[in-house]
Amino acid sequence: MSQDVVNMTREQAESMITAAFVNSKVSEASAKSVAAALVSAEIDGQKGHGFSRVSSYAAQSTSGKVDGFAVPEVSQDRPAFIKVDAKNGFAYPAVELAIEKLTEVTKANGIAGAAISNSHHCGQLSRHVEKLAESGLMAIMVANTPKAMAPWGGSAPLFGTNPIAFGVPRGGEAPLVIDLSLSKVARGKIMAANKSGEAIPEGWALDADGNDTTDPKAALGGSMIPMGDAKGAALALLVEILAATVTGSNYSFEASSFFDGEGEPPSVGQFILAIDTGATHDLFANRLEALLGEMLAQNGTRLPGQKRLNGREICEEQGLNVPKATIDEFKALAG
Image (cartoon, rainbow, N blue to C red; front, top):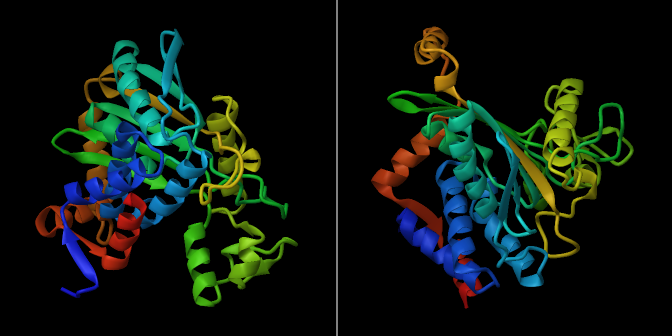
């Protein structure tokens, strides 16, 4: 192995990142929650939600843009609807509280929703719906993010990349999980191209005047193109309504950046809808497997999320390879 890379376990990585957050004005409980989520994302191959977030999260907690000592609060005034106020802290403790309460309420009512307000970047949504699926619940989750995409036909960013995730239990198999953002490509790819001075393909982004561009700098000053063009923009609007209007949170165009410590808290929202598959019909599991079987019978097909499962197997067998420069960064944050 290269001397520039260090092999470690999941637990070692979580401990190292937890220490970095505790030294950046974050409670130990919240630090552990955030660290676990970031390490999971890194293992699952979602690097844009993994180690790359540590320094920006730490900058936000240090400046007070995120309250590292916030304790989320849950309330319920309807049998099948709960509200979780993240208190402008990190999203992960609030989402964990929502999942815990939503699991209980959904199994009692057959279907239930959770609205999370005053929240922050919640990472890979697949992790959250997967937890619900492991409890026998089918779940859909949406989240709004700071503005990055213009409405179709417009030129100024208004919607976030607004991810959507879906999870469903599969008996003895790992849950089926689908997770996607609504921009044609991840904004991180454009940021990487700008850093390296490379052009981006046509169809990824628009400049500030609403024209297609291959210049990553112009793209960052413009807007992302939605997946599916007008259809993707319509879905971004749907997510905006569920994640912000329903929860009473900031719209994407009102939210500050997830990437720096400047400005007010983003105060975005997340919404989760869960369904107890046992409340549908007795043949649910068999019918689901029949559908997936027909899909996999075609050569070249695979179920969504296989990359995530492969990454976990590799980590379990071989550990996690972390660049030494990344470890040095975390140690500097830990003091």
